[in-house]
Length: 87
Image (cartoon, rainbow, N blue to C red):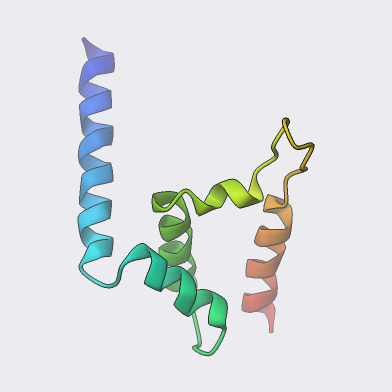
């Protein structure tokens, strides 16, 4: 029973996040704006970008793929965020 309650809470949270993101821009627009690097960003911008990557499943580009032999580039993405905030 507890697992069902937790699952429902998780689904509700996902729905709220999706609704919150859709109130600003589409996830694709968030990704495009962030990757253009024309605008200053802060921690909230990074969070918005990561959420958009998750919603569009674009995060899979950074994860390892056993079928193709691709290694994870997620550490590179994290280093990119670190570089943004240390400049």
